[in-house]
Image (cartoon, rainbow, N blue to C red; front, side):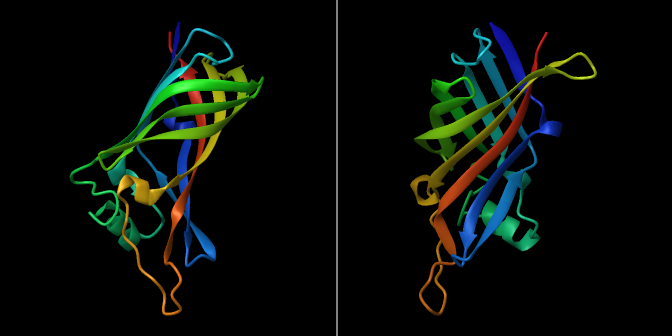
Length: 175
């Protein structure tokens, strides 16, 4: 059984949400941690635990970030972390998986499925074994109690309910 830790310097945890239904706002979490354990070299039996610090959220707009941390959205004072715990890995082919697990945001836990593309494994210049993955998925923010809403004068939504999740992850094999 091998244990891997996420490499935060070479990983990005992002989300995209439609604003005014015409453009995307991209946000990311700057502070996060993850552990992967797997006996198989192809990660087909991997178990994954992940957490992100809600207070590290950034959308390149301080006022919006504070709103996202407020009770209208993530309610960071009462729910400082969002977490994901895997429940299974479905291998589609050599480089493609579906990762299933429980996502917890604001104290609400729901099952999610993420598409995973395995980028491969390599040894870095420092002798560390690393593996890379791209993960994508969609959630409905209202399922997790992120229910703030507003409409434009024309009656359109300011923020869509659908949130796209995108993660580029590099993990380091632990000695």
